[in-house]
Amino acid sequence: MSSAAANNSRLAAALSAKDAGNVQFRQKNFAEAARHYTEAIAAVPTGVDLTNEEKKDVAKIFANRAQCNLELRKWELAASDCDEAIKNDPSYIKALYRKAIALEKMENRTKDAIEAYETVLKADFSNEGARTALRRLRAKLSGSTSAPPSASSVSRRKVTPGGPSESSGPDVLWEDQQKINLFGRLTQQLDELKEEIEGKREEIRGIEDAVEAVETVMDDDGVFLKIGEVFVQTEEDDANDHLEKMKET
Image (cartoon, rainbow, N blue to C red; front, side, top):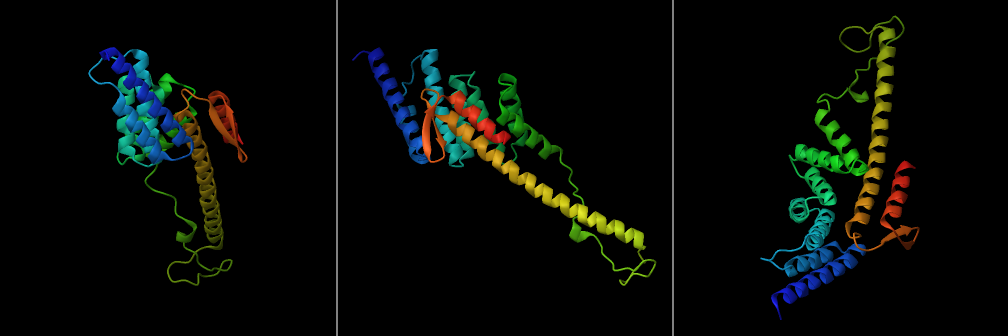
């Protein structure tokens, strides 16, 4: 077998292993999918000049394994796979986006994650996942170190209109006590609203994770979108439009 034929055979084996990984990923068998992607990477010919299209195929394999590592919470491995994907295809914004996600999850890499998300948005201004993450991380960096006192920390003294305080220490005027009580109630409401907002953010992050999962292995195939208890095959753009509408509701 000639050298060119051998290389073509190895590339075919790599793409076959990639397809096997895609099947496992759809079934949420992320560790098994990662194993197939690793086999695909091992099958890629080394020491030869690949065409641009072949390099893009290799980049997709690394990016798919990176998504598996994200699902498995292996942040460093995910970021490393993304670097390899970008090395093979510098224009692969999806790989950079996944790297940003991995960096965000890693300790002391917030600034690196922000830079990665900013680069994603420069190349793809419509990436809502990157935009949302940027707002979240910038708020995290610029957040105040001092929080307002909680309702439980506000001193409460029983007073009668114009009368002395029942607690030791200086007297509190009745009007001031009403302000303290109002402050306590408002602070409690603020805490409740913060909890509600965080709950909504968790829902949005879940939807964003679903968007990312849709994009993961569907560079070549259609998308299987779950509607109720049924999986419907559709185009990636239509699936993403559906998920974006879910965010809005």
